[in-house]
Amino acid sequence: MEIQIEGKILEKLPVESGTSARGEWKKQNFIIETVEQFPRKICIAAWTNSIPVLDTFQIGEMVSVSVNIESREFNGKWYTDIRAWRIDRPGQQPMQPGMPQQPMQQPMQQPYGQPMQQPYGMPQPQYPQYQQPQYPQQPQYQQPQQPGTLPYGTPAAPQQPEGPTDDLPF
Image 1: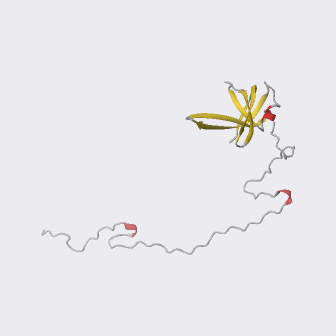
Image 2 (image 1 turned 60 degrees about the vertical axis):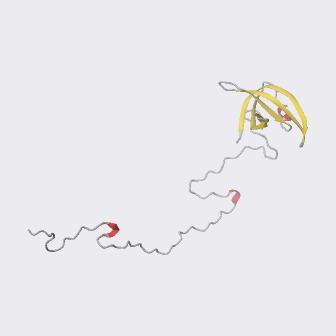
Image 3 (image 1 turned 180 degrees about the horizontal axis):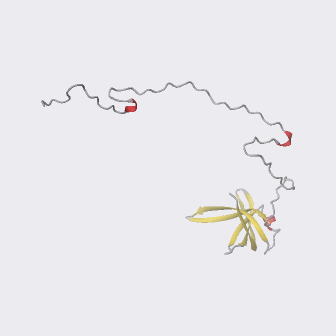
């Protein structure tokens, strides 16, 4: 997840330094004010590699800062750290080492449902045609017939016996 904050640099705090198990480190906090209906002041930390980039900006200049936000617990209290990992001028595409400085080309447009064309004259890959597997014919299930029922369990109408149906003498 990329979190990007744009604002005006209000203040640069002094550089702090120290030594840890990983070696020497430097940190410089700076304050920016967002440009919104209700502006907010945010303290952001620039660590060792980002400090030279921060030095290229002046107080009052607009910046676009990509940050990581992380919280940690120490002695029952929580502390939140906002670390800058990229500092740019707003609207500027970030420069990355080794990348050509040419505008990006538009992606190839391909009609929906058509196979993607290979760039640079590469041959189109050949895929086998999909065929539906053939399964053996399953025998049809026949429900057993019980006397006095029609198919699917429907009870048959009672049959009238021939002759008198009751034991009445009249």
